[in-house]
Length: 157
Image 1 (spheres, rainbow, N blue to C red):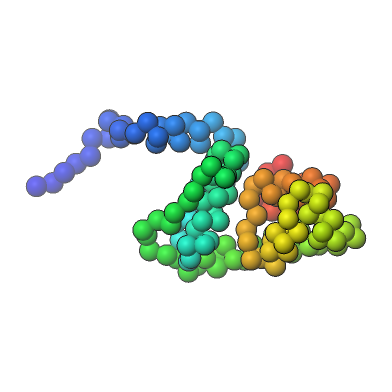
Image 2: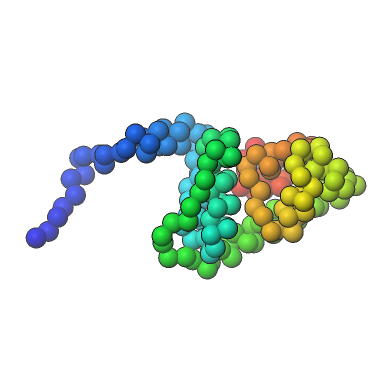
């Protein structure tokens, strides 16, 4: 027996799925693209910690209050290439943060104070140990008087 999908029918969405889809469709096109890229990275995250970090960024883009959201890794095959791409991206963003901070002759402590984030977080970002969230990039960019895209090329200012 062959089952053929009826393409005229839209899939049934739960109220939560509908709310999430509505929220995504309400984002700017650049944010929608970023969500899609992050979902792809999430699916291939090589570790649970990286999946949680990516989930936090998605939650921040969608809700602007990541503390009310949690992320869990998907039950999919993990991709080493995507994990390496994420690590390269974190390292690049970290170098950009350090470069702009040093250009301004600003200490990590001073940048952290101006951006209203912990100094230890600035250190972890600069060393590529953590991926900054959308909001964190905006705070750092504002504190250093640069465009967010100068820190993270994924931003379209």
